[in-house]
Image (cartoon, rainbow, N blue to C red; front, side):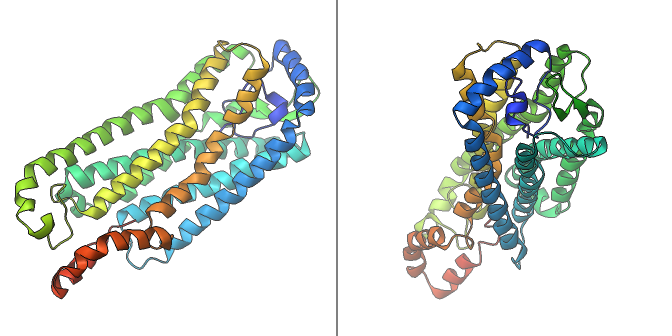
Length: 368
């Protein structure tokens, strides 16, 4: 997750690599111009404090999620995807955010060139993985709703999807090993920087990466969930008469008016959609700003600088809020939310016989 733009260069020293910084003389002049402004406004201290907060929340939150999923005796496929997402976010905190913090303390890049290339490589791997895991989750939810019978027969699909997601992430990140290296900038600083012979290389490179990381996955996810939502609506209409014949409009096996789609699956879909929305809200400003910046569409103003300082932290925020979303939807991780859900459903359980109540309770194995 490369939270940095051309304008910020050495100011921010973000270690999230590819959306970085050409190094021509004009930009170096702008760098010195804004460095003074940067110190006057204490942005560096504020950025450092923000990064520490994001790091602590990201690590603590995702560690809690991993512990919660690990201690579950009965793990669903949804739990598997939640675990993968938490692993990705945890490594994002350790490799991306933490190295950014260290870099701000040291100033120059002091490690060997090979360390520079490896760190950049894994930073970009995590960038791709955080997106492709969401695509895999979307595909899995699609099969769960549209092809429920095949879904139950193909438990290996989840591992295959995650395997493909990580494989593509490692594959697409290989150019980073060539593009980045340790070099001395024109201002005398030694940094882990892009080795472009010319700044013109940034525009095609950034365009390709933006489409691979964000725009193409976003289109795929949008199409998938459009089909999923439409399927839920169609099944609801088709089965409304049959379900309404049951007492209270609900069957004894935990299925609702949504057309024999279990509440657990619908809940998993809601969780997935909220995770996707958080991803879009955190990453859209970053990619849009970076594309406009690379094409020199944005004016050179103080407002642009302040906006970039805020926007560059949004991708890191995504890894920090994912555990909070999981907490809201979890049955066991956040008891207050679960207690309110139980209170809403309690009256329905009490109105039924003991046998049916027991079946209703047992009908929730796929809750997150």
